[in-house]
Amino acid sequence: MTVSARRTRKRPLLAAAAALLTLGAAVAATPASAEPGPAATEAPAAADAAEPAQAQLPSSFQWTSTGPIISPAGNINSVAAKDPSVVQDENGTWHVLFTRVDTNGDWGLAQTSFSDWSEASSAPQTDLEASSAIGGGYRAAPHVFQFEPTGEWYLVYQDGLPAYSTTTNINDPTSWSAPRHFMDSVPDIVQENIGNGNWLDFFVICDDAMCYLFSADDNGHVYRSETTVADFPNGFGNTQIVLQDSAYALFEGGAVYKVGDTDTYLLIWEAIGSDGRRWYRSYTAEGLTGQWQPLAATEDNPFARSNNVSFQDGWAWTQDISHGELVRTSADQTMTIDPCNLQLLYQGMDPSASGEYSQLPWRLGLATANSTC
Image 1: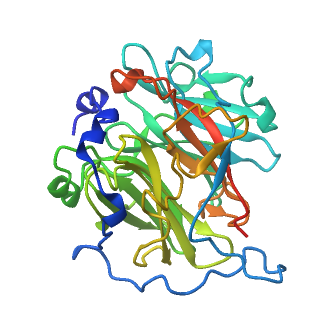
Image 2: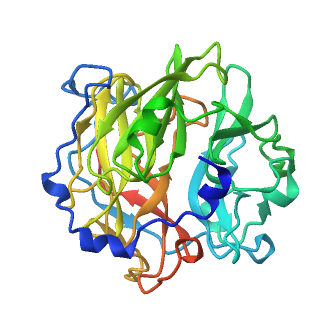
């Protein structure tokens, strides 16, 4: 798949309503090509061993969201702030990496940092295309973390293939390295199943021994590639389909997290609903090679959707709860979350907005789950 093809692609949004998906009846099946694993039947243990009761993910969610807290600053020449990834460094500084796109449809990456979320709307933003060795060309959908074995920060993104840049100082946005690739070509299994979709939205997570690269194809498939922690960032292969459904039921924007101090993992994946709006489904598995089981995965019982998200000031500024990332308890490669304190940094937009996908005015909001423990 060429970079130029990726830069000009259009994604369905409001037109998806015509598909009238019945996601509530969709069955998330693990195909024959997926690695078998045990069903997620064991209750997650407490995230904090000192807690008297075990903390676990609920079977349904309710969220309260801010309004837009990050919009594109004038200096980054962007119509949108989208696809956020967020980490907090050891000094308490928050770093948000996101996709920016100009009026010509040129996709790139931007970074902003702040000490407190109240500063997010006014914090300086840096265009990484203009300011770092990441450079120009199609770049989108960042995912940032610190690889603890080496101390390096990794910024994973798509440029037609799964790409990454590194730095030893995340506080200096100009220090990101030139792009390198986890893989130099699209795996055969992706080419065989992608249809008219796109291989995109790469997300890395590691356990003690292995690192896994999850990805989407806009065609209902969740892929997992793997390498060892010792070999990372090299050696990714053995790409498998680990979850599949209809194209809009498992669309893109996926992420995978370790649930506290347990062997339970949470997968969230963006869908396009029967109303044409974006929302999140969720699944759990015991171990990163376990079989993914639905958690909150229907339009009536979603992980995050317009029908379970309320807004602090009563202004429903978005009907899309789209491509985002949960706030983690640490910045490392384990992608650990606290099930008792779930927050989702996501993209939303004015419900009346329309037009070519690249020009939609996405903004970033922060949703907090209500009483999950």
